[in-house]
Length: 233
Image (cartoon, rainbow, N blue to C red; front, side):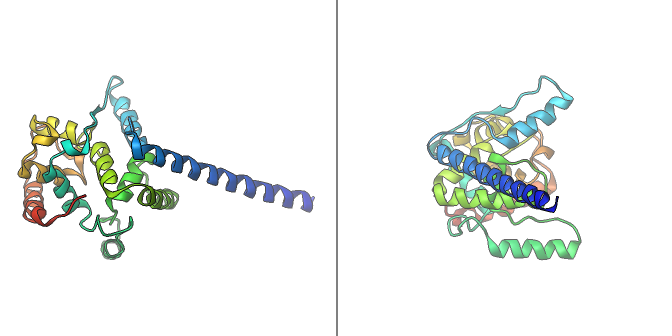
């Protein structure tokens, strides 16, 4: 009986390991695919659409892919300033930022800062949901390593700008520019770009034409003041 249980446990462990390897291989294949082909939809988009349809069964996402050259350089700079100032220098993880976020969370006694890089956020948006568990964080780390190894910084930023949320069901720079300002992503002014970057941490707070909260304006002004020094791929 004990021998049978031992074999059963070993078999279960082996099956788990095989499943884990298969999942990582699936991620790897998809990341290779996204080097040359644009994702039509992400796991995070699907998750948000399901949430929206719980309230409105006919809800749809607002999303339109736009190539990197047709996105305002001001928006690229604003996003790097706001979300990941060391984007061009790190290998996917900003260790100083992670340490500072951990210290802030310890001081507050709750999670108030994340320290995630653009690459980590892209990993989450492409393949994961927003749940906060150790398993999801471990998977995010593994996917981030794959993304940084396989993709260029330019491609990472291009996909990121096209898949992040900028309002209730509004995804990507083109839809965000149209939704909030009635212009294309290429036509965004520096001020508008800074406002969009300031919205990223809490995009669902801001409706169309409603970016004028005091906090958002202070945050946008700070981003705007630093944009000229930002380097983008």
